[in-house]
Amino acid sequence: MSESPTTPPQTTGSLVREAVEEFEVPLVRYAMSILHDLERARDVVQDTFLRLYQQDEEEIRPKLRSWLFTVCRNRAYDVIKKEKRMVPVEESSFYDLGGADPSPREAMELRERERERGEELERVYAEMKTLSKNQQDVLRLKFQGELSYKEIAEATGLSMGNVGFLLHAALKKLRSKLGAAEAANY
Image: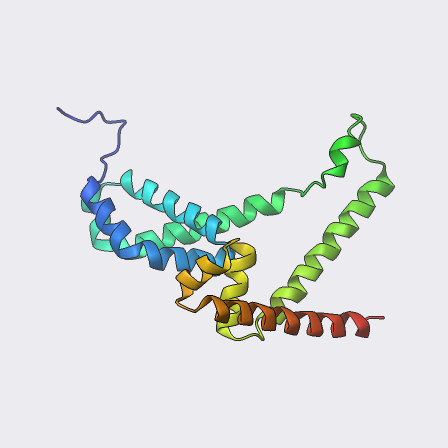
């Protein structure tokens, strides 16, 4: 059975299985460092392996590691670009749908609120960098990965009590620093 000229050769399932076994965890970590969200990172890695399946095994095998990380990086940045184009909509605005465009004043107020939210997030991320690595990890897993204390304990190898302590201490420190910064602005 010969392949048609329009269908590119594909990798065998064994190469994909080998790649998943060896590179899944490092790729998820890498995507997490870009996206700061476990589920989105996993989606990006899954898409990376799907793209691997569509490649010619002979061509890819010699450069597998670099190819996987390149595709993973590009997909992660594609996700970020797509999300920047998306405008978050508050639930209450669904009830106000009348078909009319917002007035210039309403549009300006909306842009201002979005800008302020973006600045607040930047301050939070900047302050997170001052926390210990363990505190940063448990915060990301809790609020970005939406994991339970038990799941965080399993993922990090920490006890559930330690996870709770780290979360409490990290949040207290962030509130203190962000509250002090907020007070300094007034």
